[in-house]
Amino acid sequence: MSDDARKTKQLVGRIDRATLLLGQLHDELLAIKRGLEGSNPTGEIFQHFADAWLRRHHAKYEFSGGQDAKNITRLLKVFDVATLKVRISRYIADSDPFLVRQKHPFGNFVTRVNTYSTPNGSASSSSGSIAFDEPAEVVGCKHTPPCGSDSEHTRRRMEDMRR
Image (cartoon, rainbow, N blue to C red; front, top):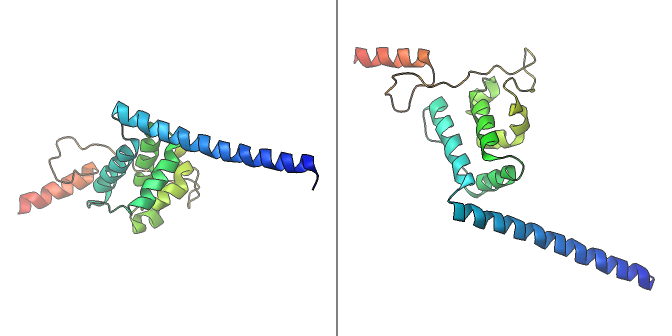
């Protein structure tokens, strides 16, 4: 190997290490800034998913700890908090039989996040698009967990009156 080629290889290696260090410093500074501002975007995403899942499935969602936190951190490098919240809501509202049967696991959301960029999505189903049940707050609902639709609220209210 010539002297010039060796110097070039050394410089490329130093540039790669410096680039990696800059990325790590950027992430650390961003975390410090968020901490000083009092924001916790990872926590916000965890909470939003858990709340939406509770409304849909009437149970507490059990996250898989470190792996889910890593996935949220990775998603937050690409999307802002508001965008992720909208996409999570669309994912939880998706009536795809597979997702309903699996009860909308967080890991599936991570792999399908781009599918939920528009209200109708782009994933294929029998009709060519996803049918979404738009989540809406039921007026006057005092159930715990809150009802996800008017029909569910009516059914639960009738059950309450029978008791």
